[in-house]
Amino acid sequence: MKEPSADLLNRAFNYDRKSQLELYKLCFPILVAIARRYRTNEEDHVTLVNNAFIKIIQNLDKYKDAYFFSWIKRIMTNEVIDDYRRNKKYNTLFVHDALIESNDSVVSATEYEINDAFLQKIMLELPESTRIVFNLFAIDGYSHKEIGEQLGISEQTSKWHTKMARKKLKELFKLELEHETR
Image (tube, rainbow, N blue to C red):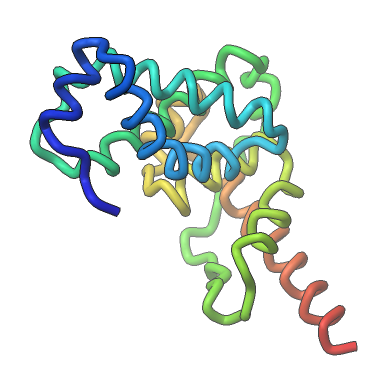
């Protein structure tokens, strides 16, 4: 996807409504894809996208010559975290503080012929707190330390959620493969 021009970004930052709409249309597919990884409800997707887009417009002056789409993905991920904090009593969800073995195996999507819809479907079957931690770690590339700081949990709790997500995903992949071979 082609990066937006500096002129478009400048006009959008200066509240030119047509430019903002053009930028919104450019950003929407990327932002909604991230929202769908974290939420199941279409209304929640749109709310997250709109909130993130407002932050994008308000902070365009802070955007420096990095990759624009990487920059907006980070804003969207932070919006998901902020939304989670606003709407949940997340401290009560993160109660397990177990020690984790550091050499867990990772389920590789390339081992299985799966499509995006299936992956999204099984990800949404994970408990919300586990899904958020796993998405932040495995997909968005946050470290366990960063996740802990963002969500107000320990590093070990973040690792525990990641381990539980991997275990559940392995089970779901196995069930799907068994179902397909029948």
